[in-house]
Length: 311
Ligand code: 13P
Ligand code: SF4
Image (cartoon, helix red, strand yellow):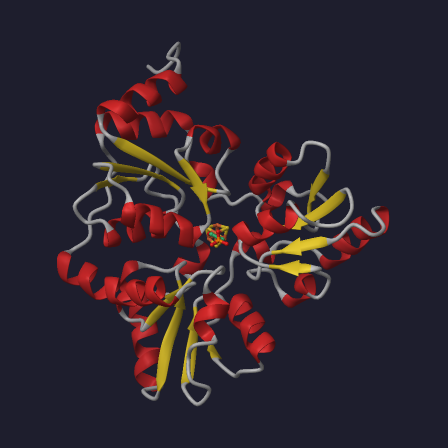
């Protein structure tokens, strides 16, 4: 039993013993963010994994992120505290269907959001994250036809912003899809003048009311510079932990779902990781991410293009 263990101290000891690095996404629970060696967005976490000198990466995020770490750093042991930490965007895009879609549009390239399986990465030309998508899209010649998947909201946002048609895969993030425009407008009325920062995985009904749209790291930077004292945050609410730490004198309010609360916007996959599971993952070096070598090499091509093209 783990009862009575000082989990933070045990995790610290194991981190040293195993020469492990703990990487965490901004959507992780505060107690995990606080003991991680590095907290970041999807692009930053990929770069950290690729450049780390650790022998073990304990990835506190979801499976596609841990798989990305393993693709970029195959010599390292990559553990994910809970292997069931998936993603609705990954689930929306089965590789065989994506392959058939590509084959039906042979004159299109596949620009693909990192929130997908390793198999879909292997079927793609260039991977993007929400923080790199705009600069990468700007480098693709205007006459090049594009399939964008699996997030239709991010794809639609880019398409509108760049005035560029793309074939959109119909996936959504269940977390960002759950924000309610009606409830957001009520909240705005209660906090006149408070700006709204939104992640581009939000539907247009939310983006239309946003003063800033960007990745988690972009939203965090905006939170450090926005005018005023109250910010409405339309992304997974665990990121508010970093905002409150950096700016304790300001107020950050999670955008609401249909029930008027922001709790329905907690990512259920990210929430599967706990301190207990992180401890046992470091102790037992399991559950481990393993990827067949041919598939890994193929998936790495589209990820390397992203790392080369992202500013
Ligand atoms: P970013 O941290 O790259 O903005 O990604 C958000 C997200 O939904 C990750 O699952
Ligand atoms: Fe996937 Fe959305 Fe959860 Fe991110 S927040 S892991 S996109 S379900």
